[in-house]
Length: 70
Ligand SMILES: [Cu+2]
Image (cartoon, rainbow, N blue to C red):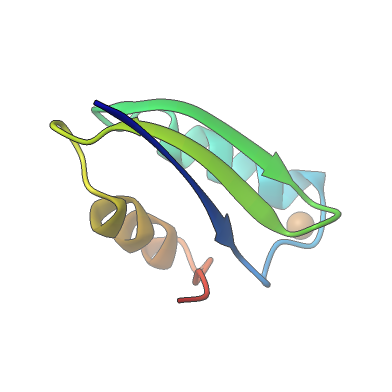
């Protein structure tokens, strides 16, 4: 089943941050779409929950220094 969630990521400051996040998350197995909004500092995520968990996506963001809020 596809799940949708919005992560708040305060470290996003510009479109370059947004590109980095997109390039990192889009190749992940199970991630269907990634939309990053540098204005609201949010990441809109659609993922297939049988293939990847929100926790794994959050972990990937943390690896590249973009820590999502709880
Ligand atoms: Cu930036």
